Image 1 (spheres, rainbow, N blue to C red):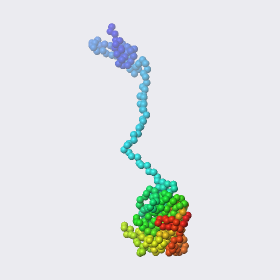
Image 2 (cartoon, one colour; image 1 turned 45 degrees about the horizontal axis):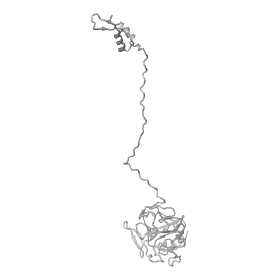
Image 3 (spheres, rainbow, N blue to C red; image 1 turned 90 degrees about the vertical axis):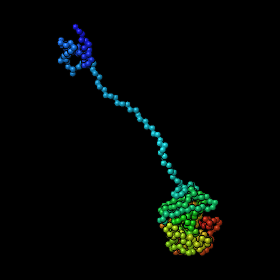
Image 4 (tube, helix red, strand yellow; image 1 turned 180 degrees about the vertical axis):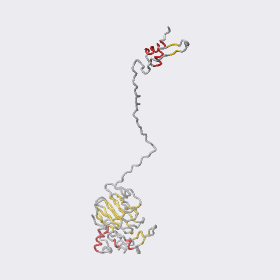
Length: 324
């Protein structure tokens, strides 16, 4: 009899059953006696839902999660990007230059209601302003400051236009305790100015002299832009001991109105900060207050030679012996 062992083995392989189960199937095979080429299989007794695999199948395991390596970000600087410049805060600087220890500072506040022009000048042989400031504008309601070293003497011209005959802040500084300051209208008048030290207004005149007009012997200078009066040049400039003209008389003794109008100067200042205010709203000086109390529009010294010491000269005039 022909062995069916290979057939049983093939059944086991094809249907995933054990050889024993395949052998049972094998016994159910019958050949058709009419056609040996056709093999008929009888699986009527086989339950394929109960297949015996011989060993338990391994449970299906979920695929392991991919292992993600830590991401390292390297920032490469972009050479095309220019970082913003580092802006250093200036020292003691509200305006053109900063100061250092041992300097004197002149602070200026514009309360005149108009943008003004500032220009700077130092005496021959004296050191200059810190930072060598150039002529500049000072906006209305703005404050600025300028520092000077010991040994300095000079002036700051202030006016609506840049003119040589503008009102001037004049000062000198030879160390703490040896400074002085004044307001000068000797060359001419453009704006009212007063200056204070330690909260006390010590020099200058806050009167708007333009209210009375500027006429001969003084010389009016007009603003070339709006045609309005900008400067009144002082006719008493060559008169060392005055008297002042009628235009300047109201401020005599409070601001310099002729070369030896020395009551306007205050020296021997202990402080190193001098604060100046431009405009009629600025507080009047001590000299103005004294004049107002006397109801006198002219300086009592206007018609007399100066009796003040002449041991040294300041800003081209004799220095006062006043001190604070």
